[in-house]
Length: 129
Image 1 (cartoon, rainbow, N blue to C red):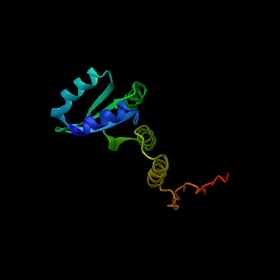
Image 2: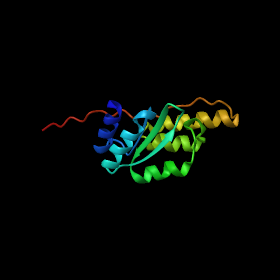
Image 3: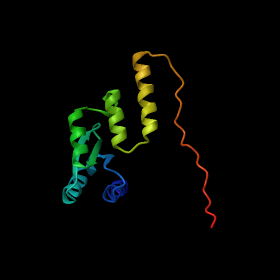
Image 4: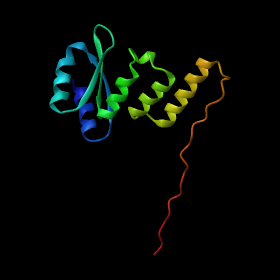
């Protein structure tokens, strides 16, 4: 439950708009009660007999998750995977690279070299007075 508490703190501080927390089924009721007490929207999805995925955060984000209607994270379309990763706050460029890699492998496209965008280096400006 320590990781859940940390995720909750990050959400409440505005560091995340959506959180995905995977935990034991036995933690589900306590987590759901806590989120209800905090008035935080959530969506709980069974992973298997012993684990659940708890999505919680901004109600608009939760509505998007519910609209996707996926049964497992491994069943996400390439587009849904991209959207979810971006909503969870993963690096946008890496999400773009992941999306292209998935598209290329599923469409048998030529395996082009993916180039990462590099952040331009800027020189410090020194004020002389």
